[in-house]
Length: 380
Image (cartoon, rainbow, N blue to C red; front, side, top):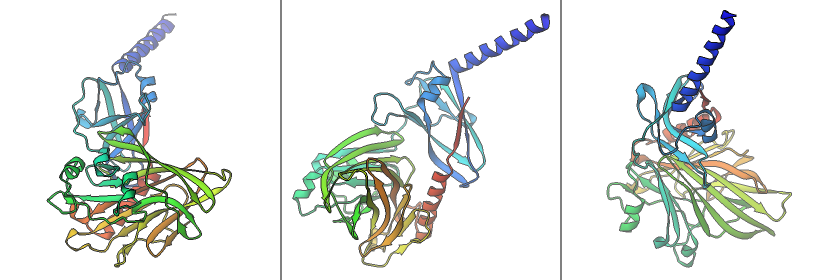
C-alpha cells in the first residue's frame, strides 16, 4: 500500500512539474539533416497552434525566443493575411546533423530592426516593390501601361547594403545610377524578367496585362509576403486568370512564388513557363538537362554596373527546360486552381556575397538541397 501511495505521489508531482513548465515556457528542438553542411540565418516556421497547445498561457505580445547560451533570437508572428496568428518564424543558424534547442519564455522581446519591407508605390505608376537585406524587386502596375516605359516581368534592383533602400530610392527618383548603395540597371521590357510566370502555348509566352490588385499579407520583420491579382485574358481561346503570392525572407536571395491559374476549360491542363530574360551578349547558363528543377543564369557584364545572376528553382514538376531566343524557360503543367510553386531571385557581384557564376550556381543548388531536406522540429 505504501509502495503504491509513493508511486502515486511521484506521478502527481511529475504532472505538476510538467504543468508548471508549460505554464512558464517550453522548448523547441530543431534537428538538421546531414545535408546541406550548414544553414545560415534560415527562417524556421513553427505552427502557432502547436505552440499554444503545449503552452496555453503564452501571450503573443510578451514572450522571447532564446537560443544557445540564452541569446535572444529574432522572430516574427506570421499571419498570412488572416486575422489570427498562423506561424512563429525564427531565424537560426545550424550545422548539418546538429541539434538546436530554443526556449520560449515569458518576457518583453527586444525590438527587432526590420530586415524586409515592401509597399504599393502609387507615385511611380503603380509599382509594387519589395526588398530584404540582400536584394530588391518590383512588379509593374496598370498606370505604367499608358506610358512608353511599359514592361511585364519581375524587375531586380541591385543593392550592396543590408539597409532597406526602397523608400530612399523612390524619393530621390535617381536610382538608375549607383550612389554607393547600388542601382536599378536591370532591363525587363516585354519579357518575364527575373523569373515571372505565364502560359506557354504553341511556343509563345502569353503575357497578361500588368497586375490590378495587391494585398500585403505580412510586413516583416523577417518575412514580407504579398499577393497580386491579374485581370482575365484570352490565351488561344481559353480565358485565364492568375493570382501570385510572393514571400521574401531576410537573408535570402530568392523569393518563394505560388502562382494559381484558373481557366475556362477547368478540367484540362494549362502549360506555363517560369522564365529568365536572356541577353544578346553571351552569359553563363547552368545545366539545362537533368537540372533537378534548378536553372541559373549569370548575365554578361553590364559595363561598370557589374553582373547580375538570376535563378529559378521549380518545386512543381518541370517537364523540360527550354533555351529560347529571348528566354531561359522551365515548363510545367498548371491544374485549374492549384498553385504552381517555385523560387526565383538574384545576386549582384558588387554586393560581395556572390561574385562568380560558379558561386551563384552553387548557391542555387544548396538552396534546393535545403528545400528537399527540411529541418525536423519537435515541441517539448
